[in-house]
Image (cartoon, rainbow over the protein chains, first blue to last red):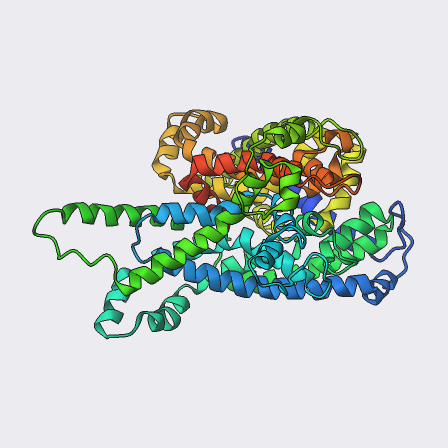
Length: 296
Length: 313
């Protein structure tokens, strides 16, 4: 028996060899790395990681820090506005594109192209466009509206909305494309039926089509939301976190403490909080999505 | 995967129906300028103009001289076209460390992107193939962790990777960065390839097995030739993704190896000297050029790539 069948470990050996990079990545980097960072967030690591347990000290310092609180507040403002606007605009654009229009490819190409650009490029272009002395604001003033004053790069009160404008420009195309794919997946008979019943188009969208597109809405939401938590390059390029600390974000806090401030413990604690935030979004979704089914 | 495909076929079937209806027996042609059409096209044109505006401003600004920029409005086309800002951005602009322009960053990015794309696609395609056709015990668990890992913020894995690379002696080198890109590209690419290979008819695989072909033989002689489109999609996804990366570049390399995005940011946001907006915009355009060209050339395949990343299999 044993001689006729090779041992279980050797069976399908080539596939296992092929999967080694995946197994290493999944276990060492993703699982191991995450656990390591969470564990070291309870230490007093400074320039180098050291295992001197201090309990929740780093977290107390984190939540007592004004910069972190501003970062969290910014993340909420940016995140909430980004989600609402990009979904509303993205869906409306997708609905317009779905009206069997001509030049659909051209419109889609134009609206999606910023998504191909990096956040660095996006941030730098909008830094220039929003330049208070030479940018859009000066053009509007020159056109006669002398008192026009919109300088999100200098005014700390509205700085985060300057970043939001750039983020929306870059990211709405993606949502439009995903929504359009969802709309194309809707059975055309539904439209015929609602037309026969004399239901106006906007009502059909709100009460029939959108509920039917729930899965794609949720998937898009999870992707966009987990991207928002990570937002970093855009801030670095457009504002550098300023003016002052007005546009700081959690991801930047982590980077600055880990690689600039030589205060690893703070960086680990902050990144653990980011992990927690993502888990709160992703776990319910994963349970909804894969909980019932056996195959992931 | 299913969705972009239906997106294309839906458009194609509309075209086909339109073709059949050609000729006098077709329905009465609709009026072009209905109120609805004006609203639809009007909105889309305004939105499209808004989206094009930054690109236009970048181009226009990069072709003006500094005096003209200081005088006038950013939307005005250049009175006197000059290519000097482009030359300066490419070969003279200063980052605070050195003054040899973006060209250094460009070549660094090429050296980072090419091996990263090849390595990550090689790993992920073989991996996806193993997951689709040679499933072994525990494979699904690792795959689940991998996909879950795609959502974990990079920030919790940054420092452990620094330690791993340092132990391997690769911290601060291009090789190290290539490995990092391969690791973080793995979830999405593996998903892409696994779904694609699963969608191929199983009979093909079984027939090859009966004929005695092994793991690698089936991969190279049957799967690979059949899946060129998905390889192209993966390439588009990776080239733009890696070219646009900033965070990994700044962490895992050192200043003379910085990729183009990092160098661009250092040039534009450098605090020294007078701000030269035309040079900055030329540099920004230069950095955005590679993904833009890929985007405009690849068209629908790009859409397929991002939709494949977004829609789970």
